[in-house]
Length: 253
Image (cartoon, rainbow, N blue to C red; front, side, top):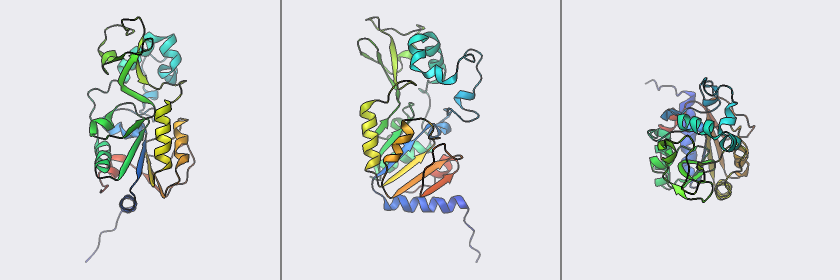
């Protein structure tokens, strides 16, 4: 009887599942690539947000449109771009989000550290989600700090959404030129430092200080799942170069 040969991906999935089976304090560190299967573009790939040509915004550097200076010095441009590109209200989670929620439910996954601001992990049912770049699911007044419904900015007909106090209403997102939120950063460092397995996925590890967080991992297994290599040189116990949804649908808990 001939036994089918396993592909390289299948072999790596088996190794990954064995690592998961042995681990009890897994932390997932994810980037934009986690949400691309849901229809949200990443930033730096050839089809990413920074390479989408839009006549309305082409005179600006892509990073500038999500920078603190754009928000406060050129707010009409900021909000126009934000409303066009950051609206995830009708976006649904994909297999990766749901599988991570399942891993948490079964006590394997202790925390998700995400660079994403789309709220899809929570939509999938995950509870302990550390959003180090904030979230589009919250907004507040820059003057009085009053909180507004998460979709207020998207529903507002004003070019620059304003509070009754006169302050500008902004998304609770960490923009370029802004420091990471202290609590989220500390929670992320602590989660990674105490994990016995760290799965890094869907990120180029090009954005600091977020990319530096994985240096705090001292556990047993460091796994990297990404399409292509990453910018940061790291040692991994397992590297899977492939489509994340293909990997996560084969993970067993």
